[in-house]
Length: 325
Image (spheres, rainbow, N blue to C red):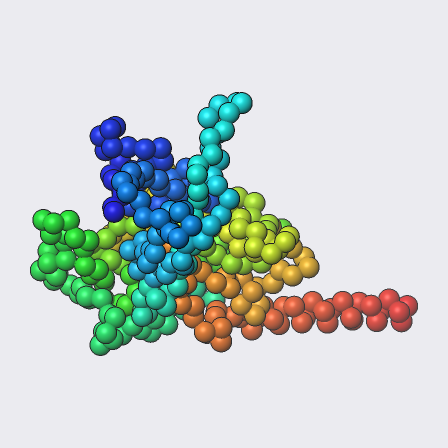
């Protein structure tokens, strides 16, 4: 069974149908996060108690997902109008869980870092998504090798394109760049750029999930949508970003999307030292991205540390002068 495309004939449609096999995350759009179809069965198989048999060996045919056996759950009730509900005879539930390790043998995205206070460019770790000789390596495009692009395009049967990425040291289809751009008196500014190195594939309704303790104080965001993801009680350190409809909700092949955000400094924990300004984890379309090693993060220059020390020393000298007086 395959999901019908949007615009299917009305006599073949049911409520919440026809997504073309594409479901958005419930955070981005809870309406298009579901797809439904109706099926009519003649001579349904019954068990020893005379009840319909549960379906078995269920799969949604998407890499990385493993589905459970069917279980009985309370019968679904649907609202007809303000006073009436319709209850079905029986409802079974099957839960399919995702595993990135089952999906692909290697990661599909990586993170690079820069700052305004250090000229060091910390790129994605080398071979983040598998080296050129790795079994999971994508085709690599360098220069004007247009033959690889033409060979990777969808065929007449509509098979998905074969990934062809730009040749890079990291060999990832997606790179997320985090740039600490500016510091103000009570705020700081970050620029984030998502680059698609796959020259033949677009990402429709992409999303980016970032974990950082200062996201709870995000005050302004440009060019992206944002929704915090409250994971543990009142802890608010993770959020989802995605594109604006009809503007940048599609990440084109060999293209990029970018945003800037302004966050309020929390005096209790804000600092530029020790790599605090960089994200703890980054996910693109549910795939965890490879981060650089913490010992390679851009550090504060020695002059900045000296300024802090000298300020403390001046305070101590001033205090001693007052005490002596």
